[in-house]
Image (cartoon, rainbow, N blue to C red; front, top):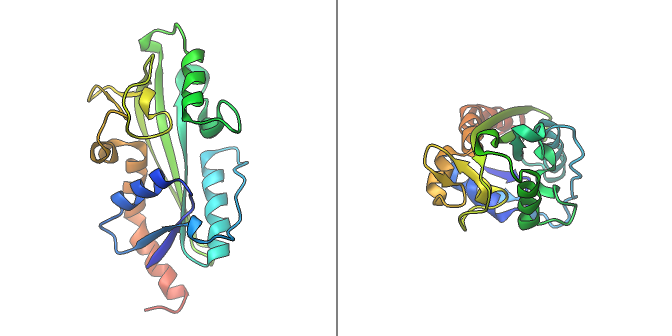
Length: 206
């Protein structure tokens, strides 16, 4: 069964495919639908943004759609950058600028006060209107300078204290076993088969 992942982010698509490889589905990016509308992520929470993306793309494509919204929540910053993680340093900001802004704001803060978590909320929506939400989180600390060349986003400054590696220093397989997205996808796996079965039946499939 073909389902759509509501992202144009090749890194995110790769992670989802790797972590859902044991389920009999084919995951395509909504970039495969050239006329698909862009979704403005103006929700006030990860859940609102994920649902908006999934609903919009499911309605347009006619396929079951998965969408996630995820980001970094820093304790000392009251949960920021949160839903603004991708554009923390401005609408045109890239990963480097976002990381630079974060490290500047935490300048001089001791390690014991640099706690943070990555959080991921995933919405799965059927074009007929059925929908469910799952989420996962992973705690770590923000280090004082970037380390590692893998991953994306805030991975170079997010330290997993258990392994002593940043997410950007981990190999992809290791990261996919422990990350916030991995935890959310494990929850997604618990409901996805049943969700897809209901979708097949409602569409007249067998």
